[in-house]
Amino acid sequence: MAVAHPSRLAKNITEDYLTCSICLNRFREPKSLPCEHSFCLQCLAEHIKDTQINGTFMCPMDRLEIQIPENTHDSWECASSFESDTLLSELIHALSENVRKSTTIIHKETEEQLEFFCFGCNEIVSAENAVEKHRKSTCDCVNLKKAFKRVLPKISNLTKSIEGMIVKTNKLKAESRQRSDSSSNNETLEEIKSFESKLDRFYSRCQGDIFSLKKELLNSDEPGADDKLENLSRVVQSKYQSFNNAMDEENTVVVLEQYVDINNSLPGLQKQIDEIPKTFFRRNSSKFVPNESLLSVFDNPINCGHIHTIELSNFKAKSELPFNYYDVAITGKYLIVVDGENGLLKRYLSDCTFVDSLRLSNACRVTVLSDDDIAVTRFGKKKITLVTVGRKMYVKGHIRTKRSYIGIAWLNDGGYAVSYYDGESPPGIEILGKDGKVHRTVLGHPNPNGNTPLFVCPMFMTTTTSGDIVLCDYSDTKNILCFTQHLELLWCHSLTSMPCSASCDRYSLYVTLPEENEVVALYQENGEKMRTIIKQTDGLERPYAISWYAGVLAVTEDESENIHLIHL
Image 1: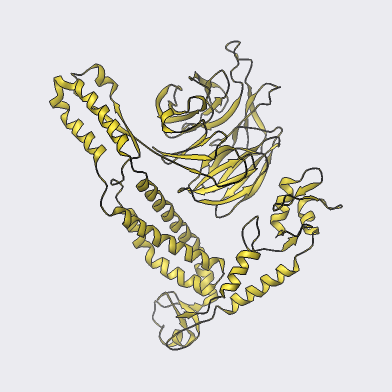
Image 2 (image 1 turned 30 degrees about the vertical axis):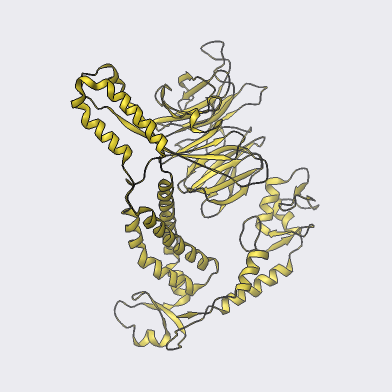
């Protein structure tokens, strides 16, 4: 079939002149500011609501201070009062007509106009063909508009499936790139040999274990696997891009054609991804962890140890502005970073590809509510902001509170654990309900068990798998504390240096120690140290915020553009 697509000139005009710089989509009801920059009415209203100070707000493009018109009672009324950009509106209308008129498709052999879609045959057909050749009991021919409405609910599921494939293939590609270097393998091999020398009296009994460990460490990659993975990733990316382009252009025919193509090829692609072997990826960093019991009781026939693997990668955000990452969170598909210096939430894919950003003044800490929703505390603002991070990132609403908070952790009953400190009044942590009302409070000092404060600077919070609340006291107390949801102290453990941020998986509690350039794992039951995850020689400088999800730790550096991804 031959399709008459919109001209490239029309597409270039849309990309260069008809895109709102806030939402990055085509303008909807464009409004023009006095500085002649234009934005969508809704985008401008939300921007004014979030940034207005003393009756003024700044243009998002050139930072020009603009006076809010008199006799306007809210941000929406204020945005509506600015002049509509009639030139943009007329140009958008003209281009829309161009696209609409270009959607007629002609069968290249019969030159019949194709107006129907047969769901039984998954085929676009002409009216005559639908009557004469599609009369089987399985045939179901409807006009194109009705067909589009019928498949629309399935499109969302197809999109999610493709996005899942992209995330999985990107993860596999990242693992493929993160190969261990020879020096790391040699050092680990020397550790194994040193340990092996202590097993002379029962070496024959342990020889099998040692051989297995060496083989695991030195096993080479599967030949040709990288090319296979790259080709598969390219196919999935291409289908996803074509599908999204069709949806963005609102071309009914192209969407239906893409629907048929993707619906037919999806099972095969999924099968190929599932069959990709993961064992051929070599490790980026490894360490031999000897069995402590074996060191003292050599005559006891137990396992020698295991290879502890850490894959470490990092990327830098591209920006000419100074920035400081206050917090980081991993959702199901995205990495969310709080750029507090510039009042932005930034979103990346799992392969560190930048997706988009959302302006949010005074953004501080973030907690994940679901794969598509997060909550953010804000310096000096008596509210918690709810943000959706689905297909588009936007402010969903606010929870009004009696004070401004710093740390935040979502609780399994839908409420929040929050912390506050200002250097003057006693610091504290509180339990809030879904509506922002305070249920319980505990102050950091005085400490009921002595003169030393219980906590002084409650920076970050997280929750354990059992729902208990963990608090990092970034002060000379060097304390990390654990409370029940009734704020009863379960344990308080002092570390070797000040703990900054924490995050939990099923068993471990991961904590950043900026002064020692380390990330350590603690036992959730008592805060005792389990092991060092990242040591000083691994290249992190002042690790700051941390977040765990599905075997991956994301770690930011204090006052740095670096974001590290650690695959455990």
